[in-house]
Image (cartoon, rainbow, N blue to C red; front, side, top):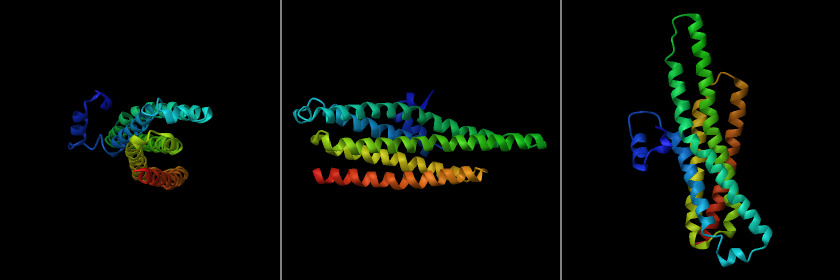
Length: 212
């Protein structure tokens, strides 16, 4: 059964076990998915409000477009909850491969490299999507239902948890790559996403606190 098909308490107990997966990567993807869901909830509570309906049509259209884009992001994030655990398991399987002959050893090395790269790509995608969602939340927060302002804040915190949590998984797996150029690319992207994501988070939370 896929993780996303588990009941909430089943998922929590699956994490709370002696198995290393699902771990921080899958939980980060879940956090980001919830962050998007909560951000969209605010929009659901905004659309029919008088203040929103009185806004300029261009503003309303852009807000609605961003709302749709957030849903697309959510739909991309949800499968990554399971993909992260699958990627981790592939690494474990690669390490268990035979080392009896030189050919076996080479196949094992190649399998580990391939699995490690996938275990980097999945959380990196979680981080990228989380950042993209934070950008949209920052654009939409001014027009959201003020009675749900705290939900904007919680959604932001969940998205940032997804972003930084995923990047921690990227960072820990980078050390397993033998391709120096690939390492540089991911390290640079890691630093950029982390820095810019933190700035967005702080900007959103500053706005939220100013309205409470």
